[in-house]
Length: 581
Image (cartoon, rainbow, N blue to C red; front, side, top):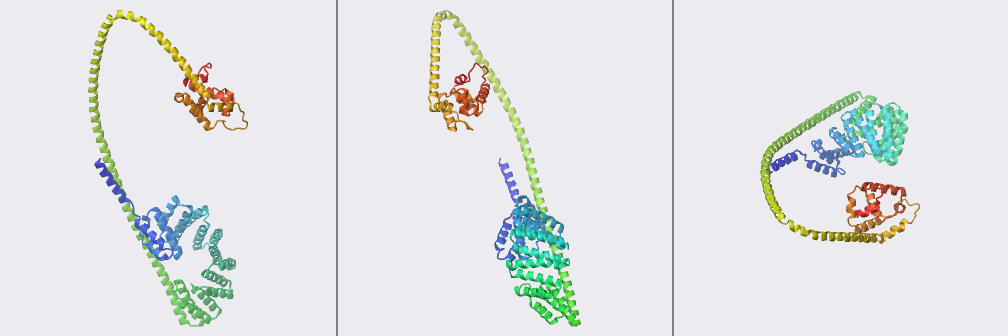
């Protein structure tokens, strides 16, 4: 037994060693959730500090992915590699709610899209949209449709993208999210601009502007004003284009560099070089500039200097523009390479970790197999020992049995000897038996007299029991109910309380009746009927009490008689039951 306890202890140690410790990951998740509202950058750093999210428990991994998705939405960044989101999505599809499945499907699709796996992203978006609609989460459905439209936009399928943006607008309106519905309208208009149908795009952008004027903030209004400026620029209405670009600049101080660049482009085309230079100088004062604006600024200066005839400056700005483009291309190529390298390193570490986990599981399996083999050997050993013990035990039993047989033969011999002695004594007592015959006749007469007295006593007891039954309150109640006709009744006149009174009274009057009834294969209803039959009502009275037809009473009596073994019609059921009692 001690060896077995030691073996089980080692088994538990190995099992605990194979379990994953999610304590550190859980603490990091809790800290990231706590600081997310006030410091999303810190929350991102905490989430990134989890080197292998896939090694977290399934529920913890789902929490990590959900929080990273919220951080990405807040900071406007791409999601990391798709693998943890794929595992979380698989887990939630089996154990999560529809709402959780829809949200994680959106994040997984965006991760696939960031990784340029557009087909996988589209498949996941379609599944997530079904989940969102199933739980009527129309706001989530709107975002899923918007990101699906983005995929069509990447593939330059602008009309199909427009349809998905329209679908997103419908879902946002159902959810009451008018701000997002306005941006969906804006996106529909952009798709028409991309197919050179700016006149069709204009109503969509105007409708979005109307919504955001009341539902959006200053940055939203400025953003839509920029979109209107670009549409009017495409339509050739430069006065309205300038008006909306200036409106975007006046409404918000954030990200106004594109508005100044667009104004400069309009002024250059119109020959108003002074205002164009003023706009470009305003862009120079904005810091920092993003890469796209820097390239646009260099190209606008090139156009301006070229239009004014300053060819040397124009060439220098064109060279700066080309260098900026090349630099951006190089930086993005480097970022792609770095991203691929990081993804490779992560995959390598994941595979190594999976291999270590597999080796540990293999070691555990080998230990279990060795333990099973040891157990089988022990069982075989114990079986052989037990077999030998059984043989010894059988031999002892055989010896004891033979010893007992000898003892019984000796006892029989003594009995025979005693019988012989008794026979000899009986021979001498023959004469005395003749004198005893007269006394035996007297004893026979006394026995018959006592039997008659017993019979009379039994009859008196039976009559007293019958009187006890008939004079009881429940018997009188049954007598009254049996004479009533209750039309419209759909159940028995006897309540459960009445039945309890009947059972208690009969058990008191006939103590052995219940024990006798139990020996037969009667249903509860048939047993109760036997109790009722001791009151000796006729079939009509019983039918009224039970609220059934007399024919049903006769059928019930017949079933009870069959189960009690009453075969002859001359034997009355009541008499038979009284005899049992």
